[in-house]
Image 1 (cartoon, helix red, strand yellow):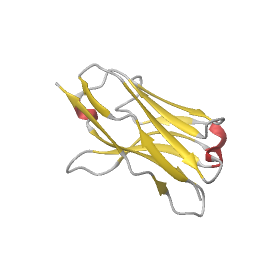
Image 2 (cartoon, rainbow, N blue to C red):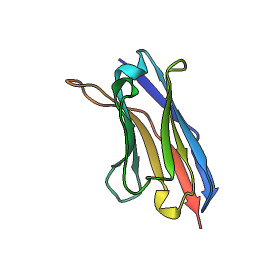
Image 3 (cartoon, rainbow, N blue to C red):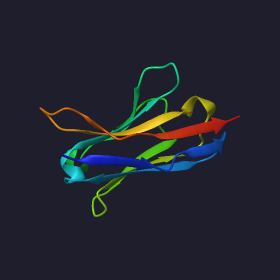
Image 4 (cartoon, helix red, strand yellow):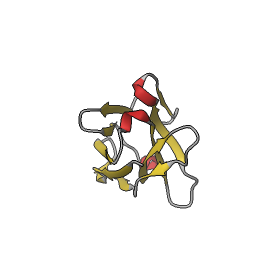
Length: 117
């Protein structure tokens, strides 16, 4: 079973950028559908971006389209989320999630992103 570790969060001003990384171990990450979710304080977890197994399809939440880019590096067994033009509504804990049909979702521990005005 794959294990996931996120990194790259931090404090950034409105309009700034961050790049999140998710490093997988224990299995071939590209054999899973790979997603980024986020959860702001007092709110439900929400889907941010995802890439299907083997990278055939990419999709984004409407709230991040045109600002965030999900990408993969299969040689490094890693997933990334480039976040540009950040705003305070993007403040949340960001989670990497691996999904495969018939199995429970696997979540990383999360990385905090805080955007100041």
